[in-house]
Image 1: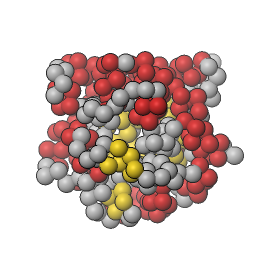
Image 2 (image 1 turned 45 degrees about the vertical axis):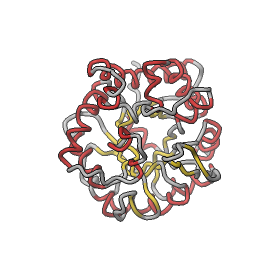
Image 3 (image 1 turned 120 degrees about the vertical axis):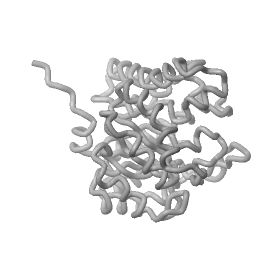
Image 4 (image 1 turned 90 degrees about the horizontal axis):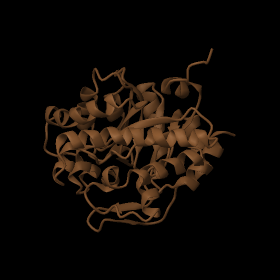
Length: 306
């Protein structure tokens, strides 16, 4: 009898799991222009094979989880480009299918498994494409934000990812909306905030922000992403202490995004040798976000598997 593959929760329980890095970084390095409002989601329609190759590069580098190209994919964002609701739903589902395809190719090529797919759901501000995902406080109620997020999450969950990545959340109020929106979907999720220092981008203390997920059964990990590497240590300790759940961390390279100029500034500061300390403090999902490429993920994976 062939034994069943472990679930995502089983993999977390067994030890640290390696996430991928910045998908947009990998696509840009392959020559793709991601300067429009849909960012990498545009390629779901225009060049899906490029998305598969980008995922594959991270799997081959040692990532065990690919985060889909749906971060900036929303019904509203697609509508602004003339894409109807049915086609937009198909593109959202395609984001999961493309990551699965990459996982199959990686496995066929000898990558150690099992390999997982996390369906990305970015914050409301990602749809606005004006940098407000780094500020939060959109002037919408929790109920309004829930109504925005729920239809996209329903489509992503129906595509059967291993986990939903509720990521780069700047505001505890939006986290509450997202946690309401995943009720009944039957798919586990992680919740990761974008932070600065010891607070969310909207200014809430991290212990208060993490607490909103502490008793939510659907949430199997809580943490931070799209932040400076130096902000991770305190966040890991706080998330583990407040929630008792596994912690997810995937910071940026250390460079800073200038939303007005639409460019990255500063110097890379992400070091693979930092991750052992994060794992010791309770991090179980560890990778990189913006500007972190496959070569760093390969170093990170080697550190965690020592």
